[in-house]
Length: 242
Image (tube, rainbow, N blue to C red; front, side, top):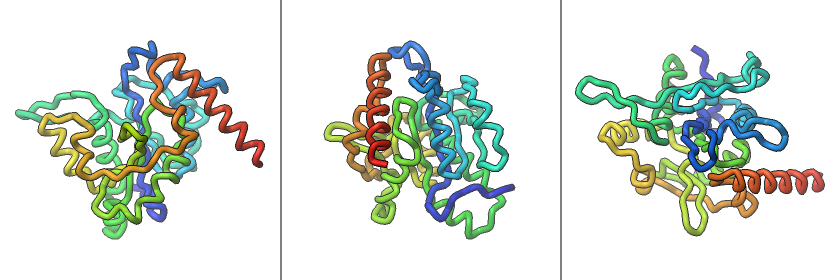
């Protein structure tokens, strides 16, 4: 089996969280259309592919489709739809939903993809990271990874690095060390689903870049359009600098 991990950059894969109900938005956020006519899910997949690692889509088995242009390139790492991790209790599997079961499934998928790799690569995988991106954000995967990656060398015993502002942590815009998988599995197997309770003992934060603040946490159509306008302004400013 091919070993896809980009170990030299400490990145093993990307998971795009696209399974939320999005009641206030009125439609799944992953299916929102940007002013460029690109679907939000495709936007995140396109940017994630630039990191040259497997891209996993956790859509709670909604069957969300990715643009065929993105899917049909055989030279790129795989784009994989993954099912949420199923908790086994009393010999019965149950699906409970939530971000952590999606992240657990992504971590297990990465381990399976590399199951036939050499021992050295397996050890490198355990020290590598999974990039987590939620579909309530327009921050490009490449820029998010670059920002979070800067703290890896100083993370030491920390196993989660995520964005934060003055009031909140954003654990679904972060990176999770692959070696956290057994702890996460035990946590969700115990019936727990609270993200903050799990990450608080092992998290290190990165301050939100000022220009990113309006690009995330949109829950209504008006907030989404505001985020799109902010992204357009950022891209326009960058093009002028070039």
